[in-house]
Image (cartoon, rainbow, N blue to C red; front, side, top):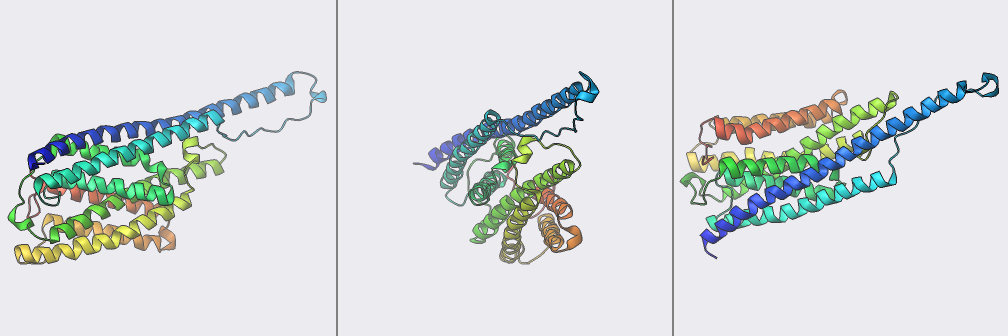
Length: 336
């Protein structure tokens, strides 16, 4: 096939993958909605039982009816409701796999069309970095059963691909001279993979805060939505977030703060020049170093560390999007 044909295939596969990611997001949204509906129904049953208990106590001679203690009906999923939740989760995961295959095909054919690695401008980095998010998610789904992240992951990936296709698209072409280096492969691939892990870790941290709050509410006598009961414990999610981010941090350190300056010396004749991208990459590193320190400090474990992880993800996103689009510098290769 000619480069133009590869480019056309890529331009078809990326929007198609975006649509299927969006359908997967809808399926996962239904999963969460069904969980909310299940707890609402359970609460209604509990109220009916309490009313019936009060009515029984006053329906006849009070001396003939024993005292009826307060009734606490736990939020138990009905089999049909549980089956619908499982079906929505499975459909969402299958659609995510299908979208991932198309997404991967779109990235590969983009590289074949350009005759190089497909991350030489903002559009290409967007489709590659979002592919890294999907890869990290699907790997950890198999290892740690992270299906509960499906809604957040598919939303992020679909949003990034949609933004790339609608606002960042650049026709496949040659690289600018400064990017002609094997360090492009090392530096940018490490940034993309660690960015995918930062995203997954940030989403786990968000759900950790949600689950921890729900667990505190249950201890206070409240109920928990079925979708939240299906999540691992808050403690387990805290451990998962730590594993993901502990994997990403050294990769970011090497790929961005070690390989990046080495490449900068070859390209621009200096290791560090306080370019906006360099500064925000360092800020990202500092925030995640603070997260790892917080996880090792008793007073900051749990919610405190999770909030730092979420802040770190927003800093990474600003470094990824804001610096490229809003700030001019030597790293301004957005191509838009």
